[in-house]
Amino acid sequence: MSIELSGAGVVITGGGAGIGAALARRFAAEGARIVVADLDGTAAAAVAEEVGGVAVAGDAAGEDGVRRLVARSREVLGAIDLFCANAGVATRGGPEAPDEDWANAWEVNVMAHVRAARELLPEWLERGSGHFLATVSAAGLLTSLGSAPYSVTKHGALAFAEWLSATYRHRGVTVQAVCPQGVRTKMLADSGQGGQLIMGRSAIEPEEVADTVLEALRDGRFLILPHPEVAEYYGNRATQTDRWLGGMNKLQRKVESVLGD
Image (cartoon, rainbow, N blue to C red):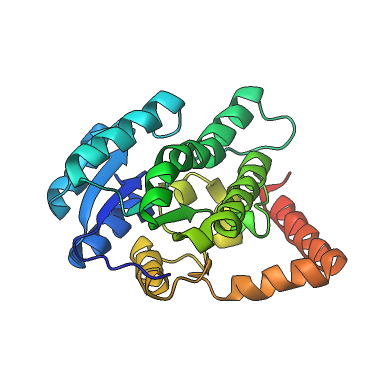
C-alpha cells in the first residue's frame, strides 16, 4: 500500500546524518511533517531545523528510549503515519568480537525495530493504517564480510520486517525494507580499507537511497533495492548457494591478500 507524504507524520531514527538525514530532506520536500531522532542531539537539531521539523535526542533502541520517542512524536505530529527505523550500528569482527558488541548490534539493529512496532501497532491496527520502513542493508539479504554482528543482526531485522508484513498487511499495515549495499556515509568510512575494497566502487550517495525509497513508497513493494544488482545476488544465494558462498569466499581471500591478513 502506498503512502501520501503530503501532511503525513514521519519519524526517522538515526536522522542526524547519512541515509536518515537524506530521507528527512526528501520527505519534507514532499510535504511531510518530520521528527528527527538521533543519539547526537546537535546533529538531529541541525537536520530538523533544515526541514522544519522537530528533533528528539536520545536512544531509539532501548525500551524507555523508544517509548519516549513515540510519545513525543505523537505529541508533535498528532499521529505517526510512517516510522523509519533507520538507526544502525556496524561492528567489525567475528566470533571473537566482544559480547558487548554483539549485544549492542542486537539492541540497535533488531530490538529497536521490535520495540518501535510494539508501541506503534495498537494505534495502527485500530485505525487500519500505518507504515513501517526498516533500513536493513544488503547484508540482511546476503552477508557482510568482516562483520559477523552486523550480518547476523541485519538478517534478524529483515526477518522481523518480513514477519510484520506477513502478519499485518491485511489489516492496513505496510512494511518495507530498504537494503542498499555501500552508501557514502560515516558507516562506510569507518569500515576501513576492507569495506572500501568490497563496497567503495559501487557506493552511492544517501540522496540516491532516498530517491529510491520515495519511488518505492508510491508502489508499496516490500524490498527496496537502491543497488538493483542485489536482486540477482539474492537469487543466486537462494538457488545456487554453494556457488554463491564460493564467490563470497573468493572475495574474502582477495581482501585478506590486500590487507595482509
